[in-house]
Image (cartoon, rainbow, N blue to C red; front, top):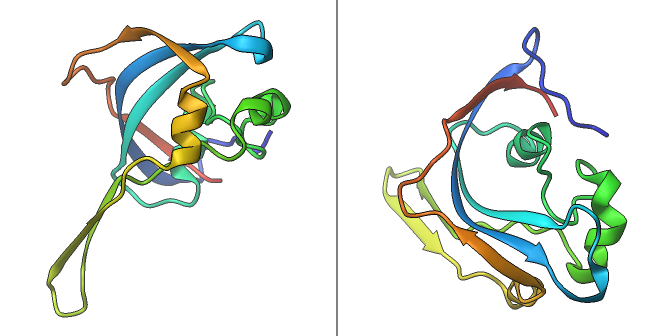
Length: 138
């Protein structure tokens, strides 16, 4: 596994997580540990693979992550054909200082993958974990 969070020589990386729902896999691809957590993530810093590294360091790698979730990749890729990572909104400033925002709904392939799961728990709005604050290198 390439998961690496260094408290000695890594750069600071901070990520906020909001748990939106909990799921179990249904159907023919069920494995022993078939629980999944749907999270909203807000990186507060911009490190390479920050979201992937932070979630993998918590023992909850992204679905179908061949690099940071390699132990589950083969099983995950049977029901989710690509990395389950989606940017729903982004905001940045142009060189003129103007704020530019973009939003995108969840793609149809990820909606189909969610359809393979059965929801068993939902946490309310505002229920967050503590901010994940580490020094990490990918």
